[in-house]
Image (cartoon, rainbow, N blue to C red; front, side, top):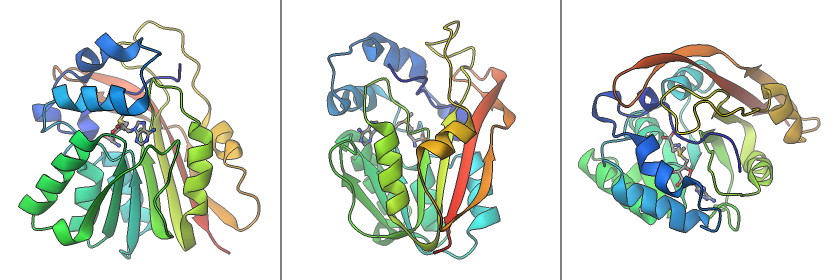
Length: 238
Ligand SMILES: C[S@@+](CC[C@H](N)C(=O)[O-])C[C@H]1O[C@@H](n2cnc3c(N)ncnc32)[C@H](O)[C@@H]1O
C-alpha cells in the first residue's frame, strides 16, 4: 500500500469539509479495488464542497514561480480546487482524474464560475493513459492513493509533458496528521530528495524547490495539527 492519501482539508474547503478519512476508511484496505472503483466510490460519498478550494501550497508556488499563465495540467484534480483557481488566474487547465464523479463536479463548478472555456476535465487512469500534449505547468498535489499504481512512472510521464521553461510541481503528504485513518501507523515517507531522484530528470532541468516544510493544517473537525509535505518544483530549461 502506498502511504497516506487523504488531503489535509485546509487544502480543500476547510469550512465545509467532510471527514474524508471516514469516507475512505471503509474501502482503504480493499486491495482488490482498482483506482476507478475506489475513487468513484469515494467521490460518490464525498461532500461536493470538499476540495473545491485551491491548495495553499500550490497557490504560493505558482505565484512565486509561474507568474505568466499558460497551459496547465492538474493530475488527480479531484473536485478541482486547484484547476479552478488556476483558470481564474488565466491558465488554460486540463484537469485529469480517474473519477468521473469528481470530473463532473469540476465541470459544474467551472460552468458556475464562468470558467468552462478554460477548464477541460478529462478522465484518465493515469496508470494506463496520459493527456496528450505539452504544458507550461504540470502539477500533482496529493496525487497519493491507497491503490497500488506506478506512481513514479506517472510522475516521470508528467515531467515529459512539461514544455520548455515550464514547471513540474509535486506537493505530497510526508507525514500523517492525527485525523488520518493511518494515524498511529509507522509509515516511512520518501524524502523530497528521493522523490526528485526518482524522476530521473537528467540535464536540462533546474530545481527551484526540493524540501519538506512543516505547516499548520486543519482537519475535518476543524482541529489543527502540524503536517509535513514534500515540495518539489523543477523547471525544464532545455
Ligand atoms: C488525495 S486526492 C487529491 C485530490 C486533489 N489533487 C486535492 O489536492 O484535493 C487524489 C486524487 O487522485 C486521483 N487518482 C487516484 N488514482 C488515480 C489514477 N490512477 N489516475 C488518475 N487519478 C487518480 C483520485 O481520484 C483523487 O482525486
